[in-house]
Length: 197
Image 1 (tube, rainbow, N blue to C red):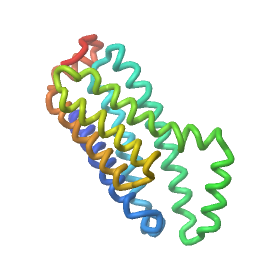
Image 2 (cartoon, helix red, strand yellow):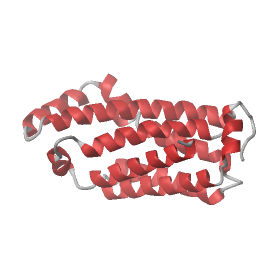
Image 3 (cartoon, rainbow, N blue to C red):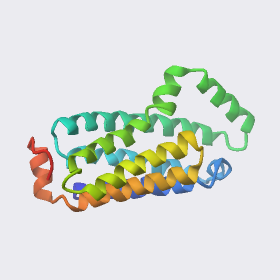
């Protein structure tokens, strides 16, 4: 399977998971037989690592790749926490106690809940800087989607705005992907230092 296709599948799964999250915690905790939303989110996030292989390996790309890897690791931790939360089922008191314990453990909460997952969006946005001239619309959508997602989640506490931001970011990345051909991806993976396709 081509790397571009894997990236698009990852984006699709990631976006679907965020729209499922808009249904709220009660829906998320009632999913059976598995926590579909967080499995889609986890698989999607891991597949997004392939953007590091598709995009240029220049200075910007190296910074973006590092942040993307750190962000994916954080998403793995975050989804693990959410799987544990889902396992409480109807035991809301136990779930609240679990989250209180988590909040009182900064060494887990900060890298895997509060800060770490944002690094994935930051990494993908920095990757898009390589295409600011060759694909300005894709760059603008990617960057504005990441900002809108952050505002929706951290400032407005609105899951619909968060999902919309992730969707905009995904459209931007797909526009960028569509302008890259497989020969350029091969060049990137063979260590080409070209700034942009």
